Image (cartoon, rainbow, N blue to C red; front, side):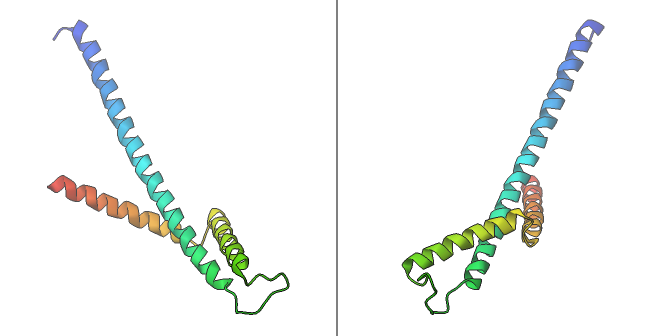
Length: 116
């Protein structure tokens, strides 16, 4: 191969390698962002169930009549918002552990798919 053709071929190969590396990095970051969102959503649901249990009514009527159907809806919505805010402010650490486990499971699955 002449020197005149070698430079453009090398430039093309380097460009393809950079594009491939960028695609792999994007796929990994996309996978990690999906795992993070899933972990955050799970922690939010866990915290919502926790706060709903914590706020459950003991059957007595409050000063604003909050034990009717409206009170149940209000408590449910309040529990959701509490859970979201707790999770956004750092949560209880459940999200981080779930994300690590999800990434580990994905890595094992992709390693297993490579052996097939």
